[in-house]
Structure formats: structure tokens, C-alpha cells
Amino acid sequence: MTTANKPQDAITLLTKQHRDVHAMFEKFENMTDRAKVSKKKLADEICQALIMHTTIEEEILYPAVREATEETEDMVDEAVVEHASAKDLIAQIQEMDPGDDLYDAKVKVLGELVDHHVEEEEEEMFPKMKELKLDLKALGEEMAARAAELQ
Image 1: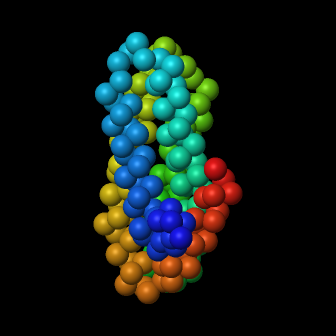
Image 2: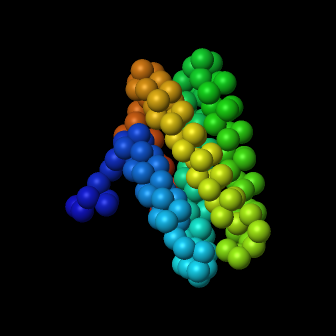
């Protein structure tokens, strides 16, 4: 069994996705204005990664966290609203070209929004998930399977 197929718990899986997309945003930031084709390709990859990530969180993780206790309701609601903002920017970026006004700004703001969202998940939601003793292995397996379907 290779490492790629090794079941990961939900937190490990999501944290890796967070790091991967952060690295993509950093790579985008370092591209020159002349690298239009590469920028478009990378921005599209970022958007696809985020669409997959938000989908598995909304379909699998958030309902599990919400069901565990009423205490998590505000936390999950906020995460859902942050996803909606990200999805709105993603849709705009996907319709644009790197030469368009505000293209780089929108990708940068999306990166900042994602960084903020990731920080909250990792510092608040993930510790709460451990505290609530959610079945992180089962959630991880379910999310990995859904992610594979979406890619």
C-alpha cells in the first residue's frame, strides 16, 4: 500500500490540502506579469483544489461537526459563509484572464480569505473535533473517497 492510498484521518487530510493550496498561492504570488499562461493554469488549479476541498468539507465534515454538539453551530455557520465568499471569488477568477483588471488582486484576496479560514479551522475547529472524539479516521476515509470522485 502506497502512502497516497494510506487512510488518513480527517485532520491530516485537510491540513495537507491546506498546505498544498497555500504553496500554490505562494507560487502564484511569485509569478511575473508576463507569465499569463502559467498564471491562468495555476489559478485554475487553485480554484479546482478549493472547489474539491470546500465540497468535501460541506458534504461530510461540517454536518458531522454540527451534529456532534450545538456548541459548534456558530463555528460551522461562519465556515460556510467563508466558503460562500471564496466560491464567489473562484467563479469570478474562472471567468477572467490574467490580463484583466483585478485578476491578480482577486487571486490574492482569495488567498488571504483562505489563509484566514484555514487558521480558524486549524486553531478552533480541529481541536474541537478531537475534543468531541469524532471518528476522524472514518471521516478522513469518506472525504478522501469523495475527493477522488471530484478530481
